[in-house]
Image (tube, rainbow, N blue to C red; front, side):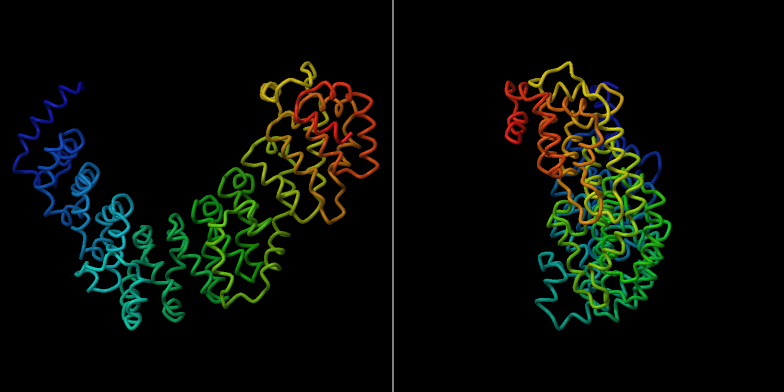
Amino acid sequence: MKKEERDKSINDMMGLISGNVYELSLKHDTARIIQCILKFGSQEMRNKVYDKLKGHVVELSKLRYAKFVIKALFRYSSPVQRSQLIKCYYNHVQSLVRHKEAVELVELAYNDYANASERSLLVQEFYGPQFAVFKDNGGRSLSAILAANPEEKTKLLEHMKAALTPLLDKSLVRHNIIHQAFLEFITHADPSSIADIMESLREVAVEMLHTREGAKVNLQCVWKGTAKDRKVFVKSLKSYIVKICKEEHGHLVLLGIFDCVDDTVLVSKTILTEIIASLEEICQDKHGRRVLLYLLNPRSPQHFSHQFLQLLTPGDSNQHSKKPQDIRWAELRAAISPPLIKLISENVVEWACEKPLAPLVIETVRSAVGDVTPIYTTLINEGLTRPLDTDHGINDSDQMITDLVADSNQCHLIGDPCGHWVLKKLIAINREDSTPLFSDLIIQSVPSDYISTWATINRGCFVLSSLLSEASKENQEKLKELLQSSVIDQLRTSNTEGASVLLKEL
């Protein structure tokens, strides 16, 4: 429909509904008319609809069709009007979050439209009746309120416990505003109060993992639970592990379990078994890879930001973990390593050329427990023991080589932007076990004719330089002799940075 025709229709509809906006919001078909006016009408029309409905927001939020009118009202109203709509929920939050229709609107207001102060004022209604009625404290958090009134702590937390316990139902506990209230309660409650609701919390843990606050609630359960509580909690996650690994916030809870639960046999049987069964799927997910990287190298600043690790460190001082943390980590690393080495050895040439997967390849070689030689062997046999295009001279750009590699059926590691970087990182790894040096295996296994062609491209020169730096003395001399007899003159005439670096090594 053309804009002119639509505007005329909207004007006609507005004239017809005048005086009946509330009644029309109650029915399925006519509620859609109100939504249409809010979407396409002028600001003046929206203001008229707002004026007619602002006194009925709580009532309409509970109705099956009218709630969509309130959703549209939130979306298309002015910022000032939105604040007034949010205020309509004041003193009604506890009852509305128990209502299957209205809770959607409260959650929408809390997540999408309320500012920080308004969100705090909504959550405060779980603290006690005085906070539902009187809204004059600027939206302070529970921490700030308790700091100013420590004598009120017991009373406030008892009320919160009574208000929150009925919300531990799968159909209600999915919402962020409820997660925030639980987080504030469990952060400040004493152990006996937490123990009283721990059993019910465990039963709905999976329903809370999709939000940041819900994940933090579950972390608190892990940290503050006894060994028995933790055992039951871990078992409650059974059959959901793959989904949790792929949750933006939920995977954090698994890391907390890896940090704190002493029974690593239980963790291996319940959590790692499911991870291993879907290992490739988890490797392909950005959050799943973080779980694997944490198992290999927990708390590594190379893989995890300081801000992220700050979410986990409070659990280090929990009173229920007895086994040294390093031992827990080592036991879990040993359990995940064999299947991870096997999977990566089967896919390493492809994954080494994919930027998201490359760090997992490198960390597996660096930190996994066991023989990583199969990874080296696959890299050499499938990624390096094949000719590099030699129709292009040493001064050709890396981009040209990248384009050539992209056109081939399989990535050639030497010419690939990510692949050659992975090679350099792997060459630099010197494991403490009996694994042979990757640099030695390359020099010993790849035909000399192929190795000499690597010096014809910039990236190849950097790889060769890494080989000369890390290989055993015998293989260093072997490689130097090969390059000096085959490509030294080409290197001297090159103007690339890689050739200059390699010449210094020779």
